Image (cartoon, rainbow over the protein chains, first blue to last red):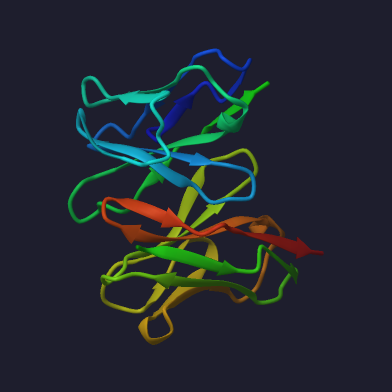
Amino acid sequence: DTGVSQNPRHKITKRGQNVTFRCDPISEHNRLYWYRQTLGQGPEFLTYFQNEAQLEKSRLLSDRFSAERPKGSFSTLEIQRTEQGDSAMYLCASSLAGTELYEQYFGPGTRLTVT
Amino acid sequence: AQSVTQLGSHVSVSEGALVLLRCNYSSSVPPYLFWYVQYPNQGLQLLLKYTTGATLVKGINGFEAEFKKSETSFHLTKPSAHMSDAAEYFCAVSAGNKLVFGAGTILRVKS
């Protein structure tokens, strides 16, 4: 299967701890996106990369959040000093820049619970 | 700024009945529009998309949607609901380099 994969699928952490999530996009896709989805809401954009460059960040992405895509392949999203409000599903998506720019393929998500 | 409104957070239909999920959008530029489906504890799967051209677009699993610019709508329909259609459905509009999603509509299919 060559879809988008995310690890871990579930993460439970205590408030104040740091967590890191990984996303592996579809191999030929040069764009990678992170979204956050809270209960009863649609996904909200956090940030995106084209190759290794992070080109846009949402105001939702506080200083405690950092994302990287070091070699233009997989990406990591780190949350430092987690808060209960960070509890959500974190979704990764990938796409091809160009005519298929907006056809984003989503991974299964990482569900974060902060206790 | 682009936005999406999905009318009805929950829709219930009987198996075999018409499915109609409503989506209205706001966009200052010609939009690209999408419908995604999400099953419990899974990511989003693309059902169909409108970019340019034909305003009636067909997607997977028998779903279709019609882009109506005058009504700023992109409603999702399926002639006959199946139990396996029970899921949450999200409408989305292009916004710069990202998608803006509606709050979702949970579809329940009664036997």
